Image (cartoon, rainbow, N blue to C red; front, side, top):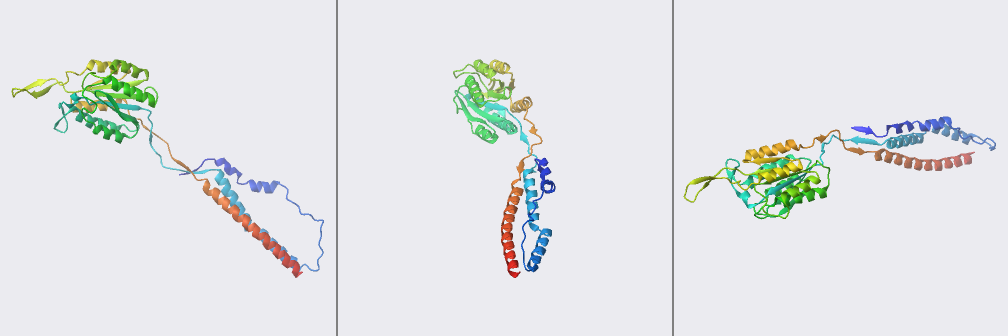
Length: 344
C-alpha cells in the first residue's frame, strides 16, 4: 500500500504559478535604439523567438522538476504487509534438578518406563516451544547450580541444551536454595518490571547441598518480584524387586520436601504442583500456560519504507538537464544573432 507522510506539502504545487501571477515582470529598457539598414535578419529572429515562447519545452522540464521536488518533500512511502510482533516483557527461568534421585524410573512415556529426567525433558521441551515471545533461561542444578542458558528469545537453543542434560552433571545432591539465588541474580541483572519475572523450579527431593537456605532465597526472589512455581516430581508408589526374588512396594518420593516447596511458592506469589506421572506433569505445564499466558501479538504494525529519494533524484536529474540545455541554448542564440547581423 502506498501513502504520503506529509500530504500538506502538495499545497506548494501551484507556487510557481502564483509567483508568476502576482510578482511584477521584469520590463526591458526601451530607451536604447539601434539603427540598421535592413530588418530582414531581425524578422527571422523575431519569428524564432515567438516559436520558442509557444513551444518552450524547457519550461515543461522546469515544471516537471518542480512537481517531482514537491512530491519528494511530501515523503511518499510504501507500507508493507502487517507483521505480528509478540509483546512480552516476561523473563522466564527454568530450573531443573539433575541430582542422582532423578534416575528413578517411576514414569511412563510412550508405553515404556523411563526415569524422571527423561519425562521432564519431553514435557518441558514442549512447554518451551509454546513460549513464543518470552525470554527463557535454563538453570541446571544438583550439588551446585549452573546457568546453562542465559535469558534469550532463542527457544530452540534452550530446548536443545535441556535435552542434552544428563543425571549427575551438576552433582548427586540437591541445592535448591542455590538454584533460586542464581535465578534471582540473573533475572535481576536482566532487569524487567515486577510481575513479569517467573521461575519454574522442578525437583524430586529436598535441599541437601548448597550455601543458601531455600526460604532465604525465596525472600530474595520476593524482593525483586520474582514469582516461583515449584513442581515436586516423582511417584509415591512403585513396585521393585526384592532380594528374595519377589516384589515389594516402596515410596520413591519419600525424600520430597513438599512443605518447603509449598512455602517457596506461597512466599513469592506462585503455586506448588505435584507431578506423580507423565500425564500429571503435562497437565501442570498446561496450567502454567494459563497462569502465565503467552502474550498476544501486537495488531496493526506495518513496516514502512520511505521512497522520497526516487522523485528527489528525478528532480535533480531534470535540473541538471535543464541547466545543460540552457547553456547550449545560450550559445545557439548568440550564434544566430551574429549570423543575422552579418546577413543584414
